[in-house]
Length: 385
Image (cartoon, rainbow, N blue to C red; front, side, top):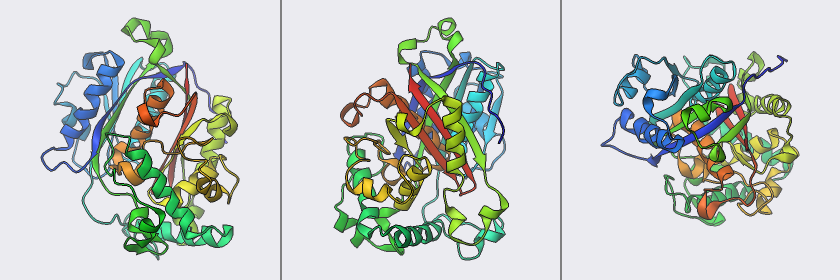
């Protein structure tokens, strides 16, 4: 394993969100700028102060999309990096911004993502992955295979998976940015339309449109930009891992979180923290089973026991390890390029103590995990102060 050697301390100094949902009258640039401007204002800096920008996106494959998007603010000549890394595109942009600053190349960076996701199911084509296409051409089909296997191996009942949605929707009611704010009972979740057994409609995240942004700065440069250090949140770890060939076969691991555990272990080592120090988590819950397996892979629960913790309320806002406090993908929605930075937004908001009715009490350390098509995982650990 490569030894991670960070340099300068890096902090998140501003975050912004464009609401998630459906916005037929707004283009990709509107969604992005709708997040970037609040992030700049939150940081107390101007667009001309930014030294480099990283843009996460998936569906828009036109040329120079980041440059086109930011032209609405006026191009200043700063380098703009366009990032496509499946559902981890936004979090990969954030990861790159961190490393650009910690290595001393830049002092102040913008990471942002936006997406206009088409309606309908998300599929994997033979061109995307010939191996995975066999028996797993639909994302939710892959998640369903994981769900079946998990239930078989852990004796988890279907009601436990449904409880993940119930909790997500309860959190989203308190979040003005969320796509879905209607709440359901376990029975209503299980009785919704079957998508891929055992996953019903309400156990699958909605595809959405939206934007998210974060401004990062070296701690030593906060005063130079007039940034309020009391609201800055430290990035304790920033890790990106990708898959290996064995993980791409047409089996239950096709969409498994098998890259999350090594990423988490690297992040814990880099930060000097452990799972016992984590006060809240944001994870990739494109389907209910995803949340359960991701929090186990992060070592927040022993393998096979996350479903019990969920049923007992341990992952709720008042539990000992609140998960997806803003509603997660299941309720926030999933504009691919924005979702990873949305997790950063929520983590920062919680660590600042600014989450309002969904505030986690005494939150000091948060972890954010985002997956991309099964082959990519980012893990970031943030801490207050």
